[in-house]
Length: 341
Image 1 (cartoon, one colour):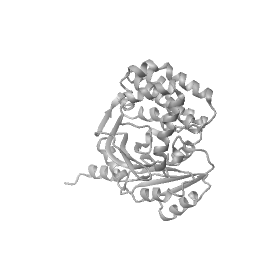
Image 2 (spheres, rainbow, N blue to C red):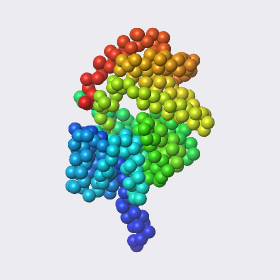
Image 3 (cartoon, rainbow, N blue to C red):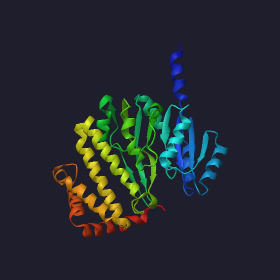
Image 4 (cartoon, helix red, strand yellow):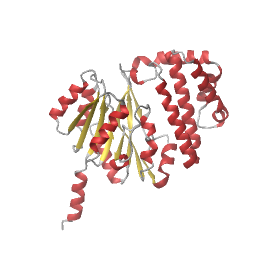
């Protein structure tokens, strides 16, 4: 006998919509590959929202061209406001519909069955977020960033376990979210490292988070996306976010405070590297960063979270800046050739 209730459940699942938000800004060289990988997904029930964030090249025209050939595509043209502003514009459009939210950076691309796999998994495990692996795509090679064994984080400890796990990254682009997680969440406009800023707000609302090992997203490594660019004080946002995380974790998840502290120290070193590589005249900021790292030297030396090589490099950064910068520039010359323009 046919079970009408089960049939209705299956139909409802098949009709669920994934709203894919794609911020677009001056990526004419890569945009078609990105959009082709989305419109050709094996999971067909997509709402594709392209947010042209004031592009000055042909990116906006390409968006309109694709909207003409695929009626699942909506295009928003707006003044340039940055990545957070573009993502928020997409979220505002899809609030009236859609069961799930996904984000794609417009210079990246997807495996053809990415959303079919993520949707099937999120339904199977009744989870609120599913997180897959990805590939770092360089000009001449790729690196597989596997997320480890499939695992499920349950209940009220999901934030602590996720934050402590080496398999969870802040980036939003290789995740599928239930739409309700973003009902009262928006990316901070005018700030960098927006993915980190909204991490707790979405994960804390999730009752269950699923991590799967399959690599389904292709993350293009570009020169414009690495710290070789001119240093900007906006990059300091990452330190402010890490300090907010440290306070948050210290108050609510004290078992993870060492991991949060390591993240802060790593980000301080990251900004120090950016200043030294750019050659910008920020000696006072360099000294301040060295001081902030030195404050935690005892922790750095005694914790197992840093390996021996990392400890030596950090000590060098705080004691012999000339030699540290030399090593940094040698490393930069060795790897910089393989990035996309």
